[in-house]
Image (cartoon, rainbow, N blue to C red):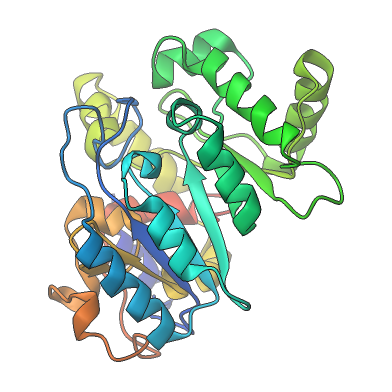
Length: 309
């Protein structure tokens, strides 16, 4: 199978940085779940968390860089005690703040954090991999489905996902095995109809993402004999039209230590931005236009079919 770099060359394409607009911040690898598809191998036994000094350095860089979006992720970002400081320091006109929430961790924090997010106007993006309790729990852990429904109900009660509230609630669905996700538009309509009918829950958008063959998901693929077949499936669906809009062209990702990567997946793969370890303190501004993106075969995930938002 040709590598991702070879595939780009065969299509006479380069993957280089465009105008950087999004600062993605990974607050650490601690999580209350150990999901089978996690490319970062986050879980309850992980102790890596971004400390307050690094949070302050990230906030300073967000201001220097003039980013338009702050994308907060983890692990479970709710398990970092500095989450509220990052959000409070970032909220300002012209900067959209979004939290990639772990619904079960968010629920465990109680109503105060949800109310804080609503008051700050933070957009919430939450994983909800399946409408089937059995499938969801198989992927994310026993009891996750019920706890996620409870958290979504509480977010709805605050106005999240409700028309006219201005509080955005988006969901993310991942396949539960070694296959590609279904068509996003049709799946979104099905989710919206079923969640309204079965639980009276609403949300704004659904994103269908393929699982990235890194970390715990890579381990499962290899142990189950699915690794080569999955990579071939991804590469066979390579869409050259997706390359121009890949998130790595407009995003810079910061790990829990403050080092920069082209995306969260390159964090997991150990591929630093521009081939060397750079800390946010060392950045005077945005990465330059035309800077090459670090490549690996996991990049096929983002160019398969309709691509990866």
